[in-house]
Image (cartoon, rainbow, N blue to C red; front, side, top):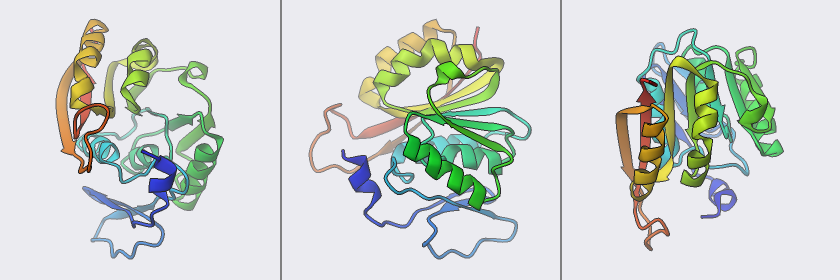
Length: 215
């Protein structure tokens, strides 16, 4: 899929978690009492309304994040780092190889007055030091396979990993590798995506994991 093309279709974004709504700047929305609204800008980045993003947000929304250090790997629009910050995580660090994505994420952080809690940088995880209590990575399966040791290095002993960006047909080798690294899947969410043709991964089902209990 051409993510840049998809992200310019002009579909207004609205994603909701308990006491938090994430929306496009042009999306009219009246917040509920006590609900915080975070505006997400998404030009020329991975679309923030993608099923895998929604799954990651659902898993994040089920955690107590207050005061926890969060890392968003491949932050794109910054939606996961911004959501984490709005839900109480601090600091929230986001990294992406794309200069444009990091610039856009910084704009969103400033606009939402979260820039004092969110640190964003262009580069890879190799330039970072841990530990982080929460590591979120919405990345393709091939990248997840290559990053298991790096995520383990950056994670605190009691850390939680939230991983997505892959389909159910791609789970077996991922599960084997993360099992060997001492991680256990505590929650597994799925979301089907409508496609006219069968994707190369031969599945319509996206997956997200919440892992913990490193041995």
